[in-house]
Image (cartoon, rainbow, N blue to C red; front, side, top):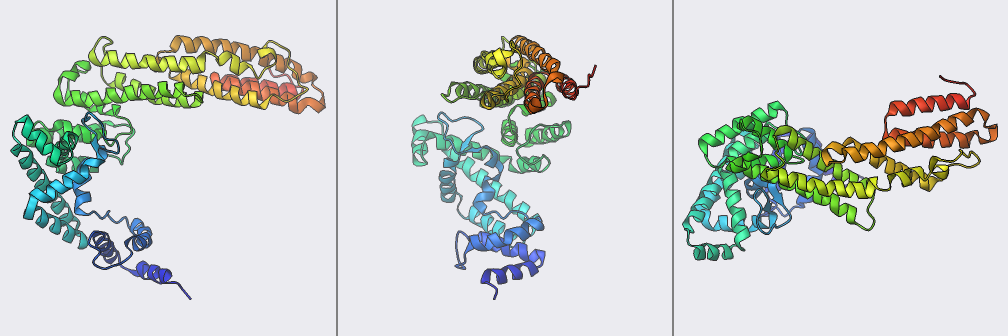
Length: 464
């Protein structure tokens, strides 16, 4: 005997696509009112596999649709002071309450039209009604904000009613994005899904076209389009590619230009946060080279992206901050990775590589694991040395270790043809250990040559 869930699942699988979309819309939109008294979550869990299969559009309540243009810059933190381009999720509730108080019948009619369009799964009407939602909300919020006037006492009093000045500043940013919501959503539809790793020239052209639309229709709001874009990027620095399409002067004097200056400030601030993350990871009592270098690689990626896209002067406003925070990264990597690299990596070799290979025992496993981690970290640091300001230090450390490891590998290879059968496994392990360390800090070609020479020697065949 089949369960009720199986029967319902069978029924849902037989529904035509249009009916399935309409059913999903009605269930989602009933969550708030609960007119039908049904288990919404349980039914939607059964519907989702079919909805995904037919690529049904997401169902939005009016509130969720209202937040769509600024959803990518919503944060769980509540920055104090308020940071442009970061809207606290805690501000959504006060904004919604305020909107319901001031929007009246205009908002109610727009919300009803939007819900009806979703129930009919009429995509053209959904788009039109969503646009009307944004338009009404932006207009009502702007009128309310303008009514506050310029008197600081009146503004503070109004802010207190909605939860404070941070709520007011967030609502103003929401309003600015709602005023260009159609353009923001159009741009998003032509870009890859978030998080976006980088921007191609085609993507830059898309952003430029939409930037020009905002300049024509909502002059002064261009920065908000850039903020929406930054919110969809994995790291903020690719937005600088857009700068190249917007300005002929590509250096950190762009800081003086309002729209690009705000976006650039976000990029530099994010770089500083990445540097702080490296320094903080290195200061932890249980700090590991793996964690520190992983964070350093993120910093290096952003540093390279910034310096590739615009000219940064060391004595410029952004340049001083960039090279200042780079010092934090180089100090952390040097102290945790480079300073003891020789000791840790060579600890797995008898007499730190200065002794004679001993094939009576296998290499110490714990020492080898520590050496492997450090060699990996050193190799990774060497590859990003230019971006973190450690070119000379990394090159010097790698050259010395390569010399020590290759000399020890040569000693192993020299002894391999004389190894008795009972100790071939141990000899092979010593060879593999040393070659692996060479591979991690230098090139795979060098390691491969040593590996082939060693295997030939172990088979009592000489490979020139």
